[in-house]
Image (cartoon, rainbow, N blue to C red; front, side):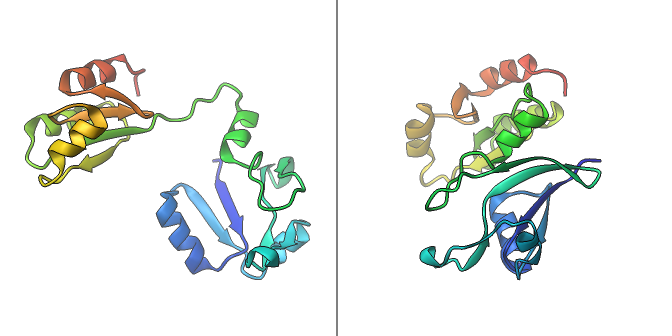
Length: 178
């Protein structure tokens, strides 16, 4: 089984909080608190000018059976470049046809039966989504400003408004079997 590992010159407590804030549940975080691994990789740099101290230069790599197959190392430029070490670059290297998962969000309100049906339809289709439960104190203004709508549920996919209940059902039916 393939595993994604993130090594950082940080302590385990910082890494744990970072994982929580970034919602990276499927990533194994490996703290390199004193930078020993990073130094042996030749990637330890002094970022004292940014008040960071000793840190890892940004890179990503594909390792198969303990052998480094490919590394994407940020260019040696001042500052903190982030151009080629991102997950998308590595994913494209592994599979040039790979498609990133859709980012799906559903605006809802508590007690809404239409919202419950919408969530059930997404769940039944195996579609991961973020539910945004709008409080009654701001719901009408928020729906108008965000979706140009007055009712929930409202479905967004990759930043695009799909619409309410019927549009959601049409979108779900149009997805490939999960």
